[in-house]
Image (cartoon, rainbow, N blue to C red):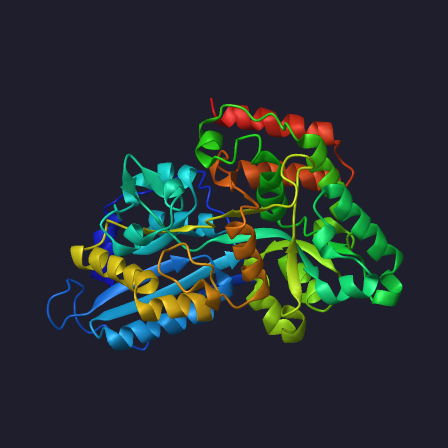
Length: 443
């Protein structure tokens, strides 16, 4: 292990302002899986010698399933040992990854966001254009991780988010979720739930987890900025300014979410939002995506089978839609040995392009695949089914937040929304600060 790490220290990386964010993760977690395989040989990949792959990833929700896959892969490939470390949720994955590289303890496979991350990490990303996974990726899913014609990241999956809602509570309240297309519709549903919250056993209609800056600054913000940038992440990445063209509707959405939320919203984190409140039927709605299904199912399996996704719309512009995109990409570190790089590519190809890998992606990971050749009839959970339905029916908008300036979505927009929710700033001040910071970052 020491020799392997020392070879990687030579890259001399120390990147500042990393933009990687936890886009879809729960809880506070930092877990390492050191497999039972014994790395008794060197890592050069000669016959009979063990090649180690160190994976550093952010998605807490499928940590256990991913570690099980790694053990299965080791059993089928005796010369490969896989070590997995997962850091997500309230933990700062980006800062942790930066620390890994600066200390020389570099992973072989790690996660990058979109074009901002690709630009930062370009010298530490292997061209994956020759992988079968890149060849099988769905149209458009490689765009955010492609630079100068090179595929520098492979998509995790396709994810979508909106307002997750409890179908049983909606039915009991007499609300037809299929009629909710606009912000006005969403507000009327919240009012109805609020008027009946005692008989429905609700603490409040909504849970706005404003403590999580990625929820408001990245996801909420994206829902109202995607139209400004024509649903084009590269247009956002190249833009010198942000206008908040639909800022009035953005404010309305935050007002609805906060007014009808469990309070104080700025104290609500992911665990309280999903595990304590939504999964226990204490709120009927909360902004999240299909990635939360495993967490809900682990708390309340019965409730988990009776949930769905409502739109986060711009009235008159993107009514009846949800944002859908690639949450993160797998990058392969070129600073390891040739054997480590090849083993990393082989592992990712196994995951996304073999029959067993495809089964695991669909049935164990509960992913909506970003690759061809999958039996999408096997998408099993209700949130992923909703995402796939929105996607196939063309009722989606894009993810442009990966094109925001580094840190702007959370540390500027999300932080300013916290001030607004607390009554410490006006909405005009939120926009002014966010516009100024964007322009400064793009100078």
